[in-house]
Image (cartoon, rainbow, N blue to C red):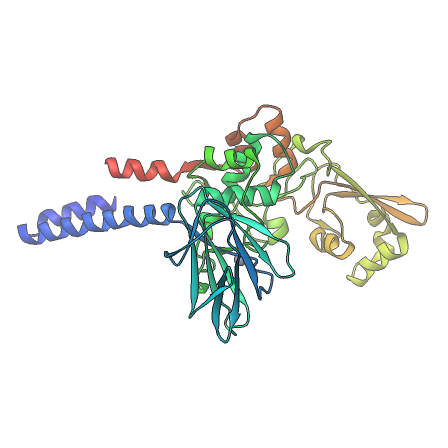
Length: 399
Ligand SMILES: [Zn+2]
């Protein structure tokens, strides 16, 4: 539509102006293609050990050869120790020390290389590709940034977040697409700090490189793939442990309605490890809680002691949000029935987690039953499709 209007305008203009506008349009188009491709093909910068204060660490190439600032060769047998010293970074290689002003780079000879970091007082970890070391703002600690290929990073995230959940590559393809979608959506989250994402839960957990074959395959076999909604926007891939048999509408947890986060019946979560839970609370505590929330407990006692979600998940109990009740009583989920139990009430619950989006245990089950990764994604997220960012670039170049 917009393009048609532009063409009509171009025809009305004189020949020279037409020429320049056409080149301008072409330039805009090429720049757009270039930017999309740059964002996807670049290595990522991930801050590692982001929750730790790193005052000193040793660096060991675990596989391959490394170079300090592109010049000094570092091999596996070399002893490398790095720490802040008088507002600078001191690097000691086999008892020979050098100091550097702002940052130090440890570059690998190729993509297959990986290294180990052993900080003082923190457990050692291994990561793929390159390491950048900077001084913290107060110059007393070190900031470690792993410069890593996107698929290596994703395999590490998938293993850190769900490595023990399954041995089925298909499940790790589901996880890889979800984590890649998150990565692309939030790729500039920490850009003001000089890196893309950190390794903590507020971004995605990234505790090491991946060494589990299925996690590596999950990332490489879905390379470039993300989940988009009907407006072609990358979705927020929320997941939880177990839905208890029915997932939750986004607005019942966070108040904003999101089209692809709809409640769906989820029989795949039945019978999985986190499917059921129980908790006993004294009737007095249970009733007093609602009294403190302004509920007329005398009038509603029967309802409070016999609350049921057997007909489907509810968002509230007598006007009180179940998300609040879950938080206040430290419950595994909001999906529970209440049964009088002597002087107590028994909460008979199903599922584990907020219940929005994908049930991780349900996804494991689907994959084990032979469903393909895109079928799992289409089951838990409504009206979405998988888009390959690599292919999109190629077809744009061919046009
Ligand atoms: Zn972060």
